[in-house]
Length: 150
Image (cartoon, rainbow, N blue to C red; front, side, top):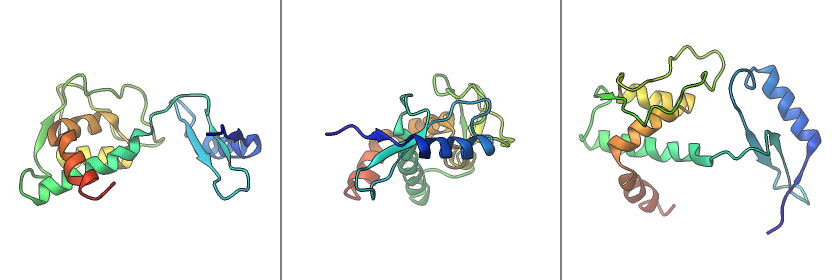
């Protein structure tokens, strides 16, 4: 496996775009892109030297399992969930500038609908953790990932 070379020109362009839209103000942000169509693929982005979990992709599977169980009548979008530690992991400013949504803290409650919205629209990790606890990582693996051959 070869290590991709950094395309510093495109990295600078991405950084400028992210700064102009306020994504780099007040919170940590990293993005990595790879141009696979180039004859020699190169990586470019912002904060490439930082380790970032690609786990936000997993949020799609969480959402699919939430909707599967709701459709099966096992839960309701209006069901309230109490946030418990250590699930309350988001403590910094919102990932998305301009968001008016307050961060969830231990002891607060939110509906499944609200948690789903925060997770998918704002990439809220506290909401993700609460939904994983309620709907089950094993269920996501069995009924969403493996059942679809992923």
